Length: 412
Image (spheres, rainbow, N blue to C red):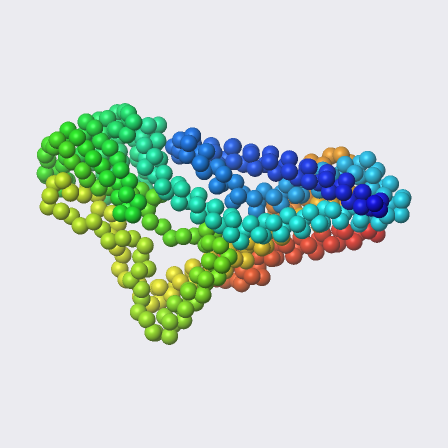
């Protein structure tokens, strides 16, 4: 085996070891200290959190992998420079760039893996994550009531207060709605109540026993032995449009073609505005029967859109699809460009203080690379720039600086 093959294998193994350990640590901190803590604050139970964590991790990889790759090259080449291993390599007549090939190879390989994951695996996980959360909305409501003895969200014009929760039963339950001035008005009280979520109907069915109910601002008041009434589903479980980040690359392109056809038809005046632009379903009609009385009406279906307004919404969705499609490879290739920056800086620091080398590399990235990336995403979604070019601005800047640093390193 040739000497530089042994060198490459040794450097690659050290890079992989540091990379894997750093990725596990960073992902664990991010998930446990950030996401899980927030989920617990939102009232999710342990079973729900355990179910969601495996779906949360893939979505963090495009952001955690570049940072851990930069950390790995900072640690490895900072140590090699401090131990004069790179000096020994140069003294043996081997160009110092030979020592950098494993890092560049690993950066390119990991970039390819992230790009591949971003095509289908990560978008499907995003979609599965959101649908799983929606399926558990009934458990979420019960968890919130067990924890706080109330469900009182500013985005919802009703609130539920209970004395206790035993299994699926709400004891001494009070249902309130907010009037136009934001004041609470008691509309129903029951000794026992149960909740059942109907996702397709966007309704929370409330079955109550032994209670009192009022309507029409308190003008009508009566007692009941058993009643079943509907409430509108809270926003976190309402019908929603699938986001661009939940679509695979093939689905993005297919949806883009569909939007272009609609836009061309509208601009040509061939079709009238689509009545399906509103995502709300028709409201449940009021019934004269007390048992079918609706406590609070869901949002009414909005008016039909004019061609100009519908075109605006179609273009907005088109810009979001184009931006998402351009962001995925740009983020994935960031690993390689982080390596181009990290290797020469770590070698120039010439000491074991890899943390200083890492911060020296990462601060310019935080100040320049990510702002350029966010700037491109925002402008791309507004349709003010072409995201296919704008999303690569940060990578181009890192690449040029990295090549200059590598050129200066070879001249030493």
